[in-house]
Image (tube, rainbow over all chains, first blue to last red; front, side):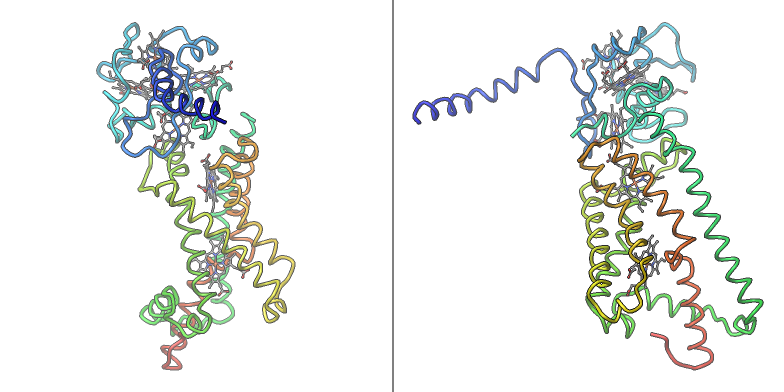
Length: 126
Length: 219
Ligand code: HEM
Ligand code: HEM
């Protein structure tokens, strides 16, 4: 009994540290949704490195793109910026709103390749 | 599942919306043509004022004698119909799909609120079912098709609810939801659910007849 209590107490104190260490891990597990004011869905599953490896995506600018005068710039990429730095809450001409940018980017490719999730709950897993 | 979902949410959705809109227009026009042929004198006393007076009264809870006579049924009927229209039209997931396909979007409900409204619709269906099973005066005018229609209406809400919570095999439930929604849309013009199309005309006619001819109220 006493031993059990000790273990529970230890676990209780260690928990914050365990959570912290998970959080600071390098590998992205899901797309950060803190840029949305009042998120309605669970964060979308996206294991950055593993995803791009299994999907066989070579170019970073498949997603981290750069546009100049409405034209896609071939050999430049924008992984130093977040999607939210350019994509606002509303559509601006050809530039989709942030949610739509994610959805069109992710779902668009999955539909085209007939591989990868396309239904809400397959990405926003509860 | 990839191909199946693409099919039911793509080409099949087109078919469903075309049948829903086209079928509704057809039923409306066919009805007006019928009236014109059989009872053209009705048009001579149709009145916008009395039509709207009747429609507004019947759209307001407890504003008619009939609504006051059965308070529980009235509350359920209004809660049911309001949630039935508001939850799918202002659902975040539906608007997201419209936005992605057509670049149109509008205000949406928080998911939690939509979820509760979905439950209200389901509860309404259960209420109507129990009413048909237990009230002798309703039992008397109930046909098997009435149960079938209740099931058609409940299905998109039950499957939508399960899909939202990702219970019981998400991708399959999602496909079933889209199918159930399409069946319901198509059923509106072609079953008793067409009361959506006819009810404004019925009220306009009753309002005008009572207002203009009988100089009284139909509520
Ligand atoms: C073309 C047909 C339709 C499509 C493609 C569609 C798609 C969807 C999607 C993607 C969801 C979200 C599921 C999730 O969160 O994972 C959903 C939920 C829902 N749908 Fe539909 N839907 C269709 C027709 C309908 C119709 C006709 C109705 C009712 C009149 C309806 C009522 C609902 C409701 C009430 C929910 C949410 C349930 C909840 O949050 O508790 N849907 N639908
Ligand atoms: C302008 C639109 C509509 C109006 C004015 C309307 C009006 C009504 C009224 C007056 C009732 C009778 C309630 C009672 O027994 O006191 C009713 C019942 C019902 N309505 Fe509607 N309605 C509309 C649209 C719809 C739609 C779009 C659907 C479903 C797709 C629907 C489904 C039902 C169902 C399932 C019942 C219950 C039937 C039963 O007793 O089993 N309604 N409606």
